[in-house]
Amino acid sequence: MIDLAVIGGGPAGLTAGLYATRGGIKNVVLFEKGLPGGAIASSSEIENYPGVEEVKSGMEFMEPWNRQCFRFGLTHQMDEILKVRKENEKFVLKTYDKEIEAKNVIVCTGSTPKKAGFKGEDKFYGKGVSNCATCDGFFYKDKEVAVVGGGDTALEEALYLSNIASKVYLLHRRNEFRAAPSTIEKVKNNNKIELILNIHIEEIFGDETGVNGIKYKDKNDNISTLSVPGVFIFVGMNINHDILKQDDGSFICEINKKGEVVVDLKMRTTLKGLYACGDIREDASRQVVCAAGDGATAAIEIINSLH
Ligand SMILES: Cc1cc2nc3c(=O)[nH]c(=O)nc-3n(C[C@H](O)[C@H](O)[C@H](O)COP(=O)(O)OP(=O)(O)OC[C@H]3O[C@@H](n4cnc5c(N)ncnc54)[C@H](O)[C@@H]3O)c2cc1C
Image 1 (cartoon, rainbow, N blue to C red):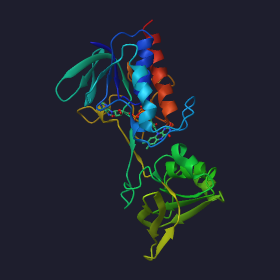
Image 2 (tube, rainbow, N blue to C red; image 1 turned 30 degrees about the horizontal axis):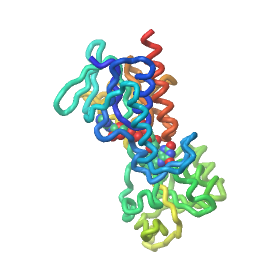
Image 3 (cartoon, rainbow, N blue to C red; image 1 turned 180 degrees about the vertical axis):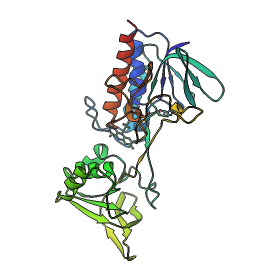
């Protein structure tokens, strides 16, 4: 039986594996369906990880993590975990062709932004289209940007961007927002945010250098264009929690309304021995540095629980 199974090899899982093995846990296996690295590996640049001054591509940035995190005995098993269930005192991890037993499990399978489906969204992803204001907002310092969405995240990210950009156009297909009243109030009172409501996005357009603007249609079918180099899309997140779903449709531990795994400050879920770290967990900041911190916290907690 494995002492510790870490599921997902992004910043959270790799850091959990590093801390667990360096902290003396013997048999720690990282289950990652692809190559370790996680979501950041798909990013063209990262420049907000403290201590790494150079601006690097996500791939380059994760390279030393892969070397360092496996230095103390962590092993990588390239497998997709389909389900985690608990049997008596142990966990059972199901893959396509086998079942693996583990004493403790840290789930770090991350989350994936939902796509809006506009023309140009995929073409310009990473070249002006983004799902993360904290990651990419700075590239639009003193420039105009568009934010698409009408929920809490869209409004919060619009507020964040208003501190950096010269102007934020907030485009929403409905007339009203589905967000906390206090956030809506802040957005409405922010003179750098212009609301464009009741519209339908037609396309995000640009050229080989990136996004040049966004085209939308109002309720009278009039087409308008905004010339912006950046479009931030926030139409929801898919939380990668399916492996925690049991045969009867219930979850093995508590999941909140947004689908995020509920944890305490030690990254413990509501089920003993099961931890969740990084973008999958409740109230995650969705940043590499935060995911790494979660991984370290969970591993330290497991080490302490063994004494
Ligand atoms: C384009 C882009 C740009 C970004 N820019 C920045 C930035 O500049 N700065 C910053 O701090 N953050 C940035 N982020 C956010 C950052 O990448 C995430 O916050 C971080 O990667 C979360 O780490 P994680 O370990 O929780 O999950 P992830 O990095 O998402 O890793 C999850 C891993 O789990 C694996 N996995 C999923 N399901 C299974 C399964 N069933 N079995 C086995 N393996 C599985 C996946 O393959 C993946 O490797 C960016 C994200 C993206 C997409």
